[in-house]
Length: 377
Ligand code: PMP
Image 1 (cartoon, rainbow, N blue to C red):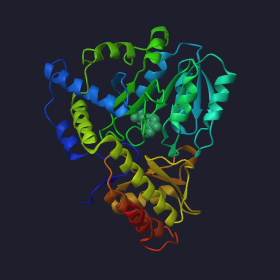
Image 2: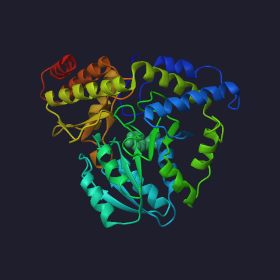
Image 3: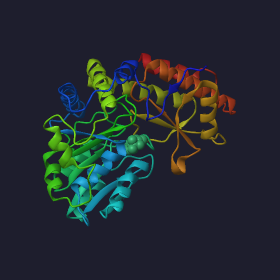
Image 4: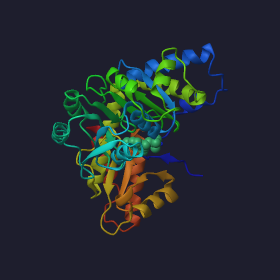
């Protein structure tokens, strides 16, 4: 038997307190007891999103909240600006296309962050843009975008500002209201330390105004229905009761640690992981790295997928591989959610051993030494 270590940028490991909370018997979702729990988690979500606006909970994976953001605010033939610097930026474009929204793409080289000036230029050149779709952490490249700077630009336009914070929320700072984010979306299986299955979206008054005029088809993902129920601490359909029990517990844990400390923990582990990669002679893909995960470029002749197989077979550790064109050339090592210093040390040590097994020239312990040094700074 080998102890399992899940070091991918979602799904992430789940604390035992959360697992135990989800193991309690299911209660009916229309009872006063459950409504009291919903009330508490709805308040807690606002705290995590740093918003005074309502945060809608959907029984879906993160993409469900992305789709909801599109279908609830836009209308057929509307134009939207899509920042595309990786797999998840592309998803905004795919969603627009699926619903007949004209997407104007700002293509960013994978590994780079979006340049806010380009967004300003595109907004100036294309009057009538209804929405700007961006990504806080582009998990496919591990890049963090400057949401604060982009928010300042979008605030001066009539467009709503929509941020995919599926992997980023609670790992990176996201001041939803202060930065002018009209809709931020996230998923349960990342920094919220829950299984996959819940998606969340904050909705500003500017976004609510668009909901009234939107004519795209929707039923299950209707924000109007969800917001109406939310006022009564209810949900339009059957809640994912057990996941909500877990959410209550994970919010308690995040509050106990303190949101700012949670973000600092992510930043610290991210820094240590990057230092380890450098010490191992691996280049980093992200020019503007995120706290969520670190994309390490494999040296010539080393196949990332082979390395992942060794990590899995020898150590029972899961890290993510590269997506699309990056498959085989990068590994993505997470420091997301329920992740500790010892998890990072163990993972770097295992990567070091696997690299050596594949013929990479590195001294045993150099990566771990770099982690130790970074963590004691
Ligand atoms: N956006 C980002 C930034 C993500 O990291 C992910 C999940 N990896 C998604 C969207 C999609 O979420 P899901 O797989 O939960 O639908």
